[in-house]
Image 1 (cartoon, helix red, strand yellow):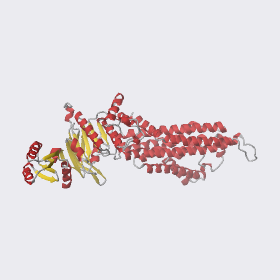
Image 2: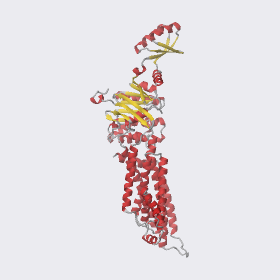
Image 3: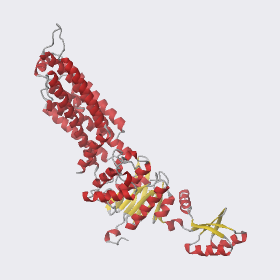
Image 4: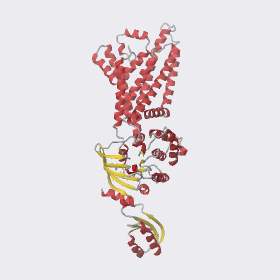
Length: 285
Length: 307
């Protein structure tokens, strides 16, 4: 019961501190600008000066949507990292945590409540942004993302991974340090994923293992590939499969992540949240 | 007055050689004390003496390195017992994005109070600490003093059996301090045990039944104020006395003079009317008679100096 109380408090804090408002305003601006851009795409002229075919417009729309999806995943990752990393650290620093923990509530309930609150926020943001953006793109350009629900799930899971990591950091580190570490981990994982892709494209096992190991240690890039695959039309996948070095493209995935990998990501989140609980329990207040 | 019961025989706080070390720093070394239920207990000491560490150990916010302790009969940090404890932390920040009423409601919920009691509890707490007019305002618009009042209100929710207050008047003006004293006396009248952490001696002197003096993590004196002060003293503002008169007063105790003020040490309370009658008989004009305010401070400094 108290887990729910803390979760509600976490959501209320995000709303009251205008984090949600700021995100909402920025997101609406991004969506409106992209809608304006997409609306001009239908009048594009191709090489010979004639209007592009509907097929060509959909192709360009898909490519731009992928970039937009990356931008939203980046915004979500950044928000998840910094809100997660400040949550416990700042409350311990200010004394709010001491007042709460003197009540009959366990530290496990505090950590799980915060995690649950942030998970709800991340999932709602991922769902709302995806439905609006993908809906607008489909309406304007005719490009309909083939798997919207999996896209939302992968985007949200990416945010949850970073938020869980940031929450673990926040049980021990100051909020800025934890946030910077979580964002750095996100960037490193993305780069390592690209490096691994090159290894795969050029059949170099050592380089490929960089990507594999990084996706196991910090699963954000592995989940990003799942999100990308959800957006890819069948014709694009067919075309990419004929390109030998397509694995090196950070905006392409040839398939969904395998089930064992998804099971690993689930276990990863459980272990990280468990470590956050243990770390906070052992923290001297 | 509360009726004595079997549970009141259990001390509110009992610790045996409770110690806490942080790496190489000894925050508290061997705290042994017993605070009976219904007592207002002052925990005195200079900054860094280990007062806050002691409170955190009693609440289970941090674990002891060695020793043991019991609060209301249960081991330190016991979850069910925390329902019966109110706490005002030394750092008394509350969620700035909540209103005072919402902070109190949150603590009602965390304390496990039945929802039907929240409203009267909130109203009572707000009234007691004088924040009724600001109940709907966000805490981040509050001054430090108002936040401390709110913290006190939080600590009083649910009529706890034990209230732990860590420097409760550090941010308050004289009026606020007076209000806190009245709140403490009301708690005392209700039979609530109060553990008051403070370095403000005048505050402790006015409300506490017993005090412990800590320094460098160790209790250096514990007892009632009378025990601790050892002797009584009275200060008088008197005019119109000559040298012979002053010599005659020596039979009442050790006399010290500062301008118009006389301090007579070692004089029991019963001796005060005789002293005043003698002064008047001598032709002295008595403007003020008051117990010495410096005695606890003197004793405190003396105790610290002895260490």
